[in-house]
Length: 95
Image (cartoon, rainbow, N blue to C red; front, side, top):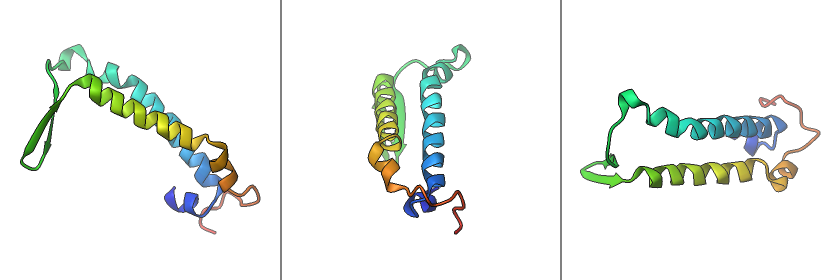
């Protein structure tokens, strides 16, 4: 997908938009998936990076994921990104 976007292919634009829609659906279902009553863990989420351990509240994690998703939707459906891809270039990304 990255090669198709860098090559200014329409296929890259379609793949980027498809990936964005799938990711938006998964982010929308994230609270339901994480708060399954059988797997419910009370307390903040713990993140480990080497020896460092950080605890973040869930609303901060959800807010960050939602913000990143909104930015990706804005980029994928922006008119300038659509203009960046050539209309005459076909769907063959290996060309």
